[in-house]
Image 1 (cartoon, rainbow, N blue to C red):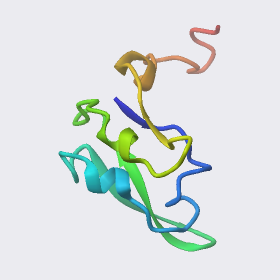
Image 2 (cartoon, rainbow, N blue to C red; image 1 turned 60 degrees about the vertical axis):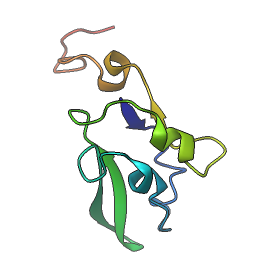
Image 3 (cartoon, rainbow, N blue to C red; image 1 turned 90 degrees about the horizontal axis):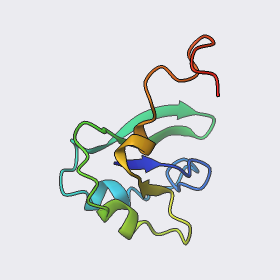
Length: 93
């Protein structure tokens, strides 16, 4: 599943308009959408992965323009984590 791992490096988070991950996604507007958020720079269009629709094809990661990609495809168990972890003292590791 694709995961936006580099929020601090993603050009959209920096107020620039990149969105290449969204544009190249074969199931655009389902697996990856652009969600508006308001911050000090105005309204940003943030790439958001919907794990229930993402196939993990890797197209978004392959086309990311950054040398250290901001979006990565991870094994589903790792990308989604385990339910209940870090919840009110349960499953402490």
